[in-house]
Length: 75
Image (cartoon, rainbow, N blue to C red; front, side):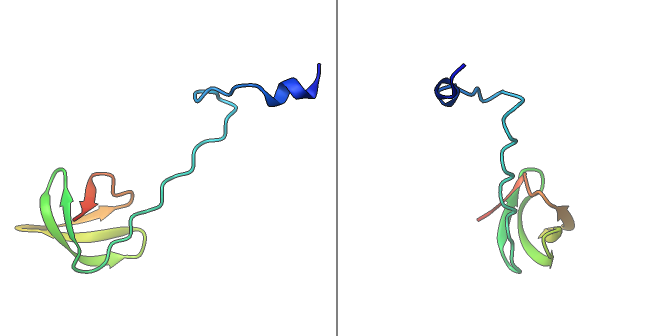
């Protein structure tokens, strides 16, 4: 077996021997950012708890949303 053929092997995306993909970076929010959430709608960030969570004022309620912010996007 030659080593040259090992370099030409095609790796499938579903291979269990492939390293897992890197996690996307955590979205950073600041006080006053306008955001939209799939469940709660439009809101404004009123408290940032580091990289762990944010508190958003979705009138008439305030909701603490933990990372990852999969269903929330900044406007």
